[in-house]
Length: 298
Image (cartoon, rainbow, N blue to C red; front, side, top):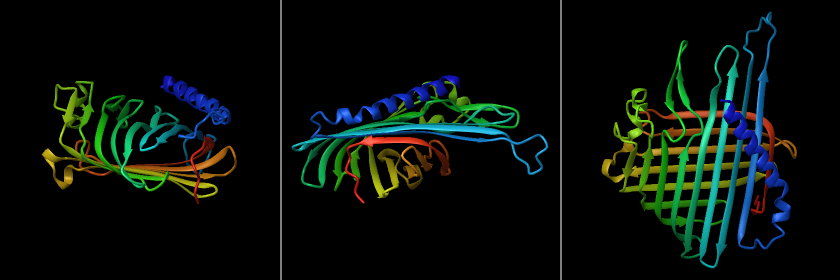
């Protein structure tokens, strides 16, 4: 667990350095580029005396995030890139540390303009997590996931609707996806093995449809919203229950230049993982930074 603390603290410090140098970078000719980087560190702590009658448990929690965008546009060509890195841990007295959040998402897309709002595009994204995940009982924990177990590499070819720099919708009738589970013994704890055949490390889905909607909106001077919805449907196994859905939402309220409050939620429906909807939510207060030259529209 210590290596993840160190990794993300270093990641945050790198983000701070990049943010401090942003003004110098924008002095170079960046007329074809829109860039943005944002990050933050949130820490929560609670402690009680041994004779505290109200009940409670000593705890400490932290989460760190770093996300960025870099979009290029010249003539009819565009190249959009983004990443989201999120990791959080909570530690209650008498218990091992447990993850509260864990996201690794990298996306890149090349587009060719049809008109002011529509593009042809080819895109690719990678989705996984940084650290092991466990099912906990009173006496033991069971490994159910870890880095690249599972991991998803999705490609897409199709049309993109992009009316402005805040919103985009990608529609792809041809969207091959590769699901990776490199640990060939993970199925002992996860019988469905995330849809990968037992004994194999990769599942390939060639014939599929995908949709990705991305919205980055400044709601007011101190409030911003980030949403991303992904849908994936395999033509060969097409049925209502086998269509995958994922919705990421992040709402950030700026308290001061360094302090903000953030609310995040993640909703997943993936029949290869679970027959029910999965949901997680987090609320945090911490320090944050954001630099970039994306237009901020009210």
